[in-house]
Length: 140
Image (cartoon, rainbow, N blue to C red; front, side, top):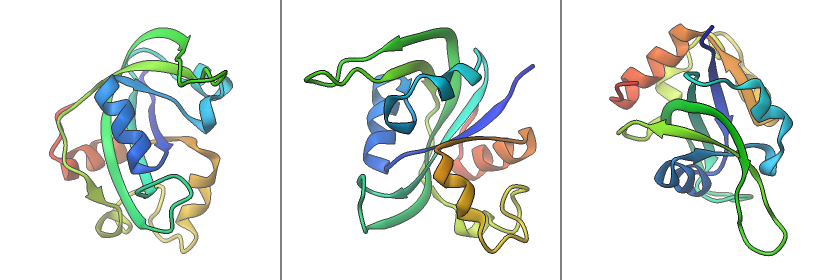
């Protein structure tokens, strides 16, 4: 059964994964990625442009589908080898979340909608995924 996910990372990191055809979450931890399967939809939400940045962005930055069931470690330099999944990212425009807050099921009516973003990865409905994809002009 296909699932749909929001992953959270700075725009800089999300764009890098988008260009490289991979995703990683929670500073490269393996366990969250094990919940994701081939064909699942993934959209990245970026609270800021850079990691630990004060430069608020609050936008969806990249969107795609998980290519396969491969889970592997990437090489980032030094001894940092984060866990990754292959993703086929779609052509899409970055889209602010603010205009969608009253539409999306996971944010509608919630003043503290950003709280769940702190987990780095969480499941959303297919309806929300399709709404975000449409707003981003993406075909996924």
